[in-house]
Image (cartoon, rainbow, N blue to C red):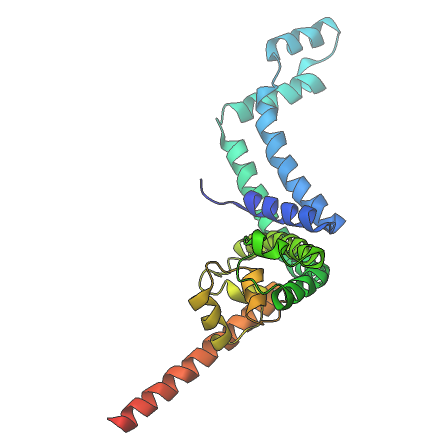
Length: 254
């Protein structure tokens, strides 16, 4: 199924729910309005009544049927129904445009609030990465042998990775709505890290997540969309500088 702004909005809603950070009321209202637009258009055609009966009812009641409200409503519904799914398709397109615009408008406000909410979880990951001495949080047996304090640190770290995963999923919803390509720079969603730090993570970690970044000493800070763009620009600029230095050195050797 092709991803749509409705899916992106769902990712954002789930992220907010998991983090326990309510979305701005205006954001929720606008997303609900866009959903309702599609729902109304789709159900409007299914609920059309009998035009003939409405005309006869108006005549029997002594009303001019051509100005009767019920008749006029059914005539409009009949006209829309004769267009097939045209009105429903148009409503879906408009709804998606509205949802996309709403997500882009509120993205950085929401992500900034999520970054604040994640600070305690980032601290828990830093402590666990320093104290537990395990590479993999699935290594429960090693944690248990270290006693109750280690088990608590492990539990806090597990919860922190869940919170971070939800936030990153929500970030991708916002980024997709804004048509921002993050595919080659997912680590920069988590942290404003340099190339050396990210290379170390990629070489040793089984997966790219908050735990493995913390384990390599990278400071975690969820990016807003603007911050993510800036991180990517700095990262790519540093990579270009490195390649130029390498080419110069290679030329000198040659």
